[in-house]
Length: 133
Image (cartoon, rainbow, N blue to C red; front, side, top):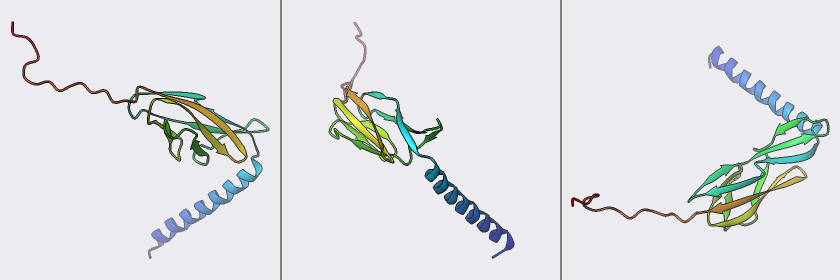
């Protein structure tokens, strides 16, 4: 192994260890007092329409942290709305439902309405498109 490869590997390892240590220390010091989700309500229009959610944790001293990647998302009406592990909501059928968002011991809900999910396709055209008369 060359000296260059050793240095790169060592730096990556040290940065990774420092990041992990810093994250656990930060999580212990950051006590969540409130959880907000943006947008508060979503209207999905069209077949396969999608929209993402942003989750913010608030501390007692007013600090805000984006915790979207660490939050847990659950669709309470999975027949109408599907939600991925990263908070992306997708319309499955017309209707309304709630998405439950959890982080730490805090929860929040988002109302998701899906409309016009039936795929409407124009009939194919054959021959001329205009009348020659």
